[in-house]
Amino acid sequence: MGTKSVDGQISVDCWERLRAINDTKDILSGKWKIMIIACLASFGKKRYMELHRLLAGIGTKMLSKELQELEINGLITRTVMNTKPITVDYELTSYGRSLKPIIDEMALWGMYHREKIIGEITQKK
Amino acid sequence: MGTKSVDGQISVDCWERLRAINDTKDILSGKWKIMIIACLASFGKKRYMELHRLLAGIGTKMLSKELQELEINGLITRTVMNTKPITVDYELTSYGRSLKPIIDEMALWGMYHREKIIGEITQKK
DNA sequence: CAGTATCCTAATGGATACTG
DNA sequence: CAGTATCCATTAGGATACTG
Image (tube, rainbow over the protein chains, first blue to last red):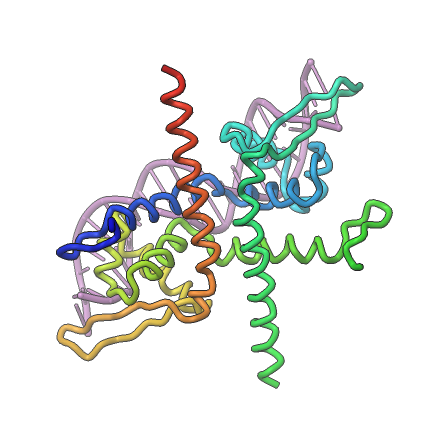
């Protein structure tokens, strides 16, 4: 019930599902957001500079921008530590951690994909 | 074994995992690719024009380009039908269908996210 | 250390018109 | 119908220098 399609119309359920996928895609958009989340998920709390080193290639501007967007969306927390000079910790919120199933599936598929590509290359010889 | 970290070095397993996530992200990059896959997964085989209508907002240039990239990566097939004028069917390959778990998790999270946002708004009153 | 500010390029992507 | 070709605006994103 609710998933039946009439007269070529897209069912409401189906449309909501596509909208949901699109929402998720938008929140994870940008060249580095997924990797930032994956890093924080793998390594736990990290400092700005540690992230900068882990995400080889990212510039300070992009790192700041992506971190800010993730914070606005409630996926990470930013904590200024009382050191000198100050240091800042970034950490996934429980909401951010709820993305783990997506990240996990992406990791799985990526490994599968790499094996497939390598298989195709070695098969060619 | 293999996941232990020494001297602050990232373990090989962990690095491979991050690389896999990054690969997947690259293949699904672009504004419409995920939605195209989701549409084909939901509705099955579709024609160029049907996709154009389903993906409200996409232009012909982007649709062609994204479809080509998906085909190059072996995620979809393109079949020219012998009608007049010709029509073209696009369909997920079994390889493309292997992305389903990712799409499913994204759909789940997107619904969860929308409920959370709506909850936060109504709570404000 | 943790960023901002500035400048710059390349890529994204939209609108429109056209073609076999 | 299923695209291509062209033009154009916006944005993403990199490099570098600077600040509290």
